[in-house]
Every structure is written in C-alpha cells, then in structure tokens.
Image (cartoon, rainbow, N blue to C red; front, top):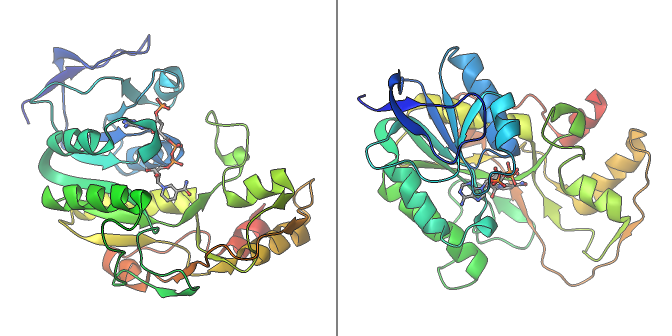
Length: 298
Ligand SMILES: NC(=O)c1ccc[n+]([C@@H]2O[C@H](COP(=O)([O-])OP(=O)(O)OC[C@H]3O[C@@H](n4cnc5c(N)ncnc54)[C@H](OP(=O)(O)O)[C@@H]3O)[C@@H](O)[C@H]2O)c1
C-alpha cells in the first residue's frame, strides 16, 4: 500500500495531512461515523491488531478531541483520491448527511479492496410487520414503499455493488457506565422510554435487541473474515415485546425511575429476528445472550 498519511496528535484536524512519515498499514481501519458503535469497534480492532492505526471520518468537528483521546485520528473532510484503507466500516446514520449515498460511495472508494468494507444497516426493510419470524433470507419491502426503507435499501445496494458486506443491526443499547468518554446517558430504547415514563406506542410490538459491545464484536468478526457481498444480521435471538422489555427494567431494581405504560393501540407490529445463520458463518456468539442477561450483570 503506497499511501502516506501524517496524523496530527494534538489539535483536531479537518483533514488527514499527507506526509511521508506514516504508511497505511495492512490492518489499519477507517471508521466513517465513529459514534458509539464506531468507537467500540475501534477499541476491539486495536485489541486484535495492536499498533494499527484507526481513522475516523465525521460530519462535524464536535467530537474530534474525544476521538483523539480514545486513539482515533479524526477527519472532517474526505481524504483525497488515492488515500485508501484496507478496512473500512461505515457506521454513520442517514439523518446527519445531505448526501448519504454520496458519502457511502466515497467510503467505498476509500477501500483498497484488500481487507473488508462493511456497512451498518437496520432491520426496517425486512417485509414483516405482524410480529412474525424473520431472518437473513426474509424478503425486503419493495423500493418505493417508504423513504426510510428506500434510503437503506439503496445504500445496501451501493455497498454490495462495490463488493462490500452489510450488517443489519437490531436496536442497540449500552449503559452509560460502559461509554467512558462518550456519553452521560444510557443508550437504547429502554432508556428513552424510562425517561419519558409513558409512551404512545402499542405495548405488544416485538423488538429485537443487541448490546453495543456485541454489535461491535460481530462487526469486527465480519471485518476480519474478509467476506465479499454478503448480508449479516446482528441480534440476540431473544425478541421481546415493548411491554416485556419495560417489565424487565421495572422488575430489575437497577433503575431509579419506574416506567408507567404504553398507550398506543393501532400502530404497526414488529418482527422476531433470528441470526443463527450469521452466527454459524461468522463463528460469533454475543457476550450478552439476552436483555434479561444484561440486566443481571448491572
Ligand atoms: N442505534 C441503534 O439502535 C441502531 C440500530 C440499527 C442500526 N443502527 C446504525 O448503526 C450505526 C451506528 O449507530 P450509533 O448509535 O453508533 O451512531 P451515533 O452514536 O449516533 O454516531 C454517529 C456518528 O456518525 C457521524 N456521522 C453522521 N453522519 C455522517 C456522515 N455522513 N459521514 C461521516 N460521519 C457521519 C457523527 O459525526 P459527528 O461526530 O460529527 O456528530 C457521529 O460520529 C448507524 O449507521 C445507525 O444508523 C443503529
């Protein structure tokens, strides 16, 4: 790999500076969207490949100092043509960019084709909204049904055309204590609902969860195996209704607040995800086997 980059270790940068002093190594990783998931991926990646460099592409400079503190070299603007990385993971959500698909193409063009290129998507496009079973082979909704699913499906298609792979992630959660410098609040649907107390959704909608650490370990396992053009699913195989999730939270005795109730009656139902195929193909199991198991560990 012929690319030479110099990364500032002091002030937040707007761009990686070109310099002969630093080579892009065989195990270096570019994270587009180094948020909660991306930073956990960075942490696990460095455990796998001590001494590697991890780069982060963001949309603002708001978190550049935090990123430098956790060993990620941040950049605001896209690296110039020719600056390519063996491993690229795109974990930026669609809502912060005016040209999400353009950003994704730039990420794909930043991949040198050697290691892996992985895109993080969500399970929204699976065509199932009756609390039915769903896995990697479940058909997706047709393009044109909703803007939200169109954005994700078109993004997945771009990634697959470039030879990259996709990880479809269920709803992620993590307690703030595990977030280190990142956040002062718990992350996840349960934390959001607990804060609100009463929520205008139906209680029997089935959801699928995964701890952020497990989503990160699965992402790293997929990156390491250098798959091409495959779709994987990240979930804990313990689907729960909204009501069951909040009953577990209330009964756990681990939170100071109490959730009151869900008041919705006619919003859509959900889906029950199973990722046995992904587990077998990647050789991965979650650290937190279910949301109940996670609560027990608090
Ligand atoms: N949370 C869930 O339950 C869930 C479920 C399924 C899938 N996902 C997907 O999983 C991924 C990671 O989620 P997360 O919770 O870790 O996200 P997050 O913490 O909100 O992180 C977002 C990060 O992405 C950066 N970013 C946003 N748009 C960007 C763009 N166009 N180019 C470059 N950087 C950009 C932000 O930069 P700044 O530092 O400038 O703000 C921030 O660093 C996302 O793709 C999300 O859609 C999440």
